[in-house]
Image (cartoon, rainbow, N blue to C red; front, side, top):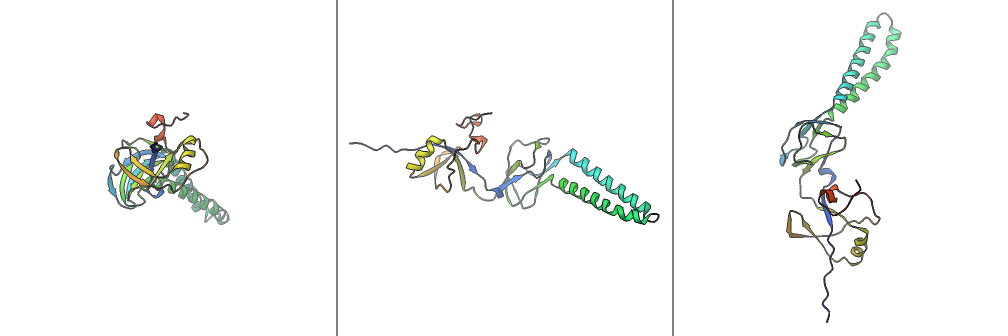
Length: 212
């Protein structure tokens, strides 16, 4: 007689955070002040960190100076040359708007929490002086356990999984003794040359080789 051997495929993945839990840097700059500690509970709109951007600060100062200089010129000639004074009003408005735009960009250097939850920085050893690009992930605000995992599957395994899959189980790297039942809610049929997370690469301890 023949005893059927269970078939299984072991794949690596990452716990995927919903976008609302991700804190992204709204403007580029160097980390100047860290205002909360890792694993600290925060409330909505609480300051998390402050960045410094010397170039941005310089642009604000220049725009302010140009606005004030134009305003002073208008006040000097508004009695002696009213027509020219009125003509310069449009220039004044434009310079004021430019100044306000730079000021608004400066306010983006303050990174705040969008919601209440547990603050987890993207880098546990994050220190002042670190440069963060606009849009970079600064950390996460966890208000509930994440419910999604993204899996990177090779093309060879993908066909087998699609044809023979009966059950899905998840084990976390820090607790391999426990399993969680799961369902596949979405698959990407076409292949991709971009890895879903650097954590799955060989250089980070994963099994997928990447081209540096």
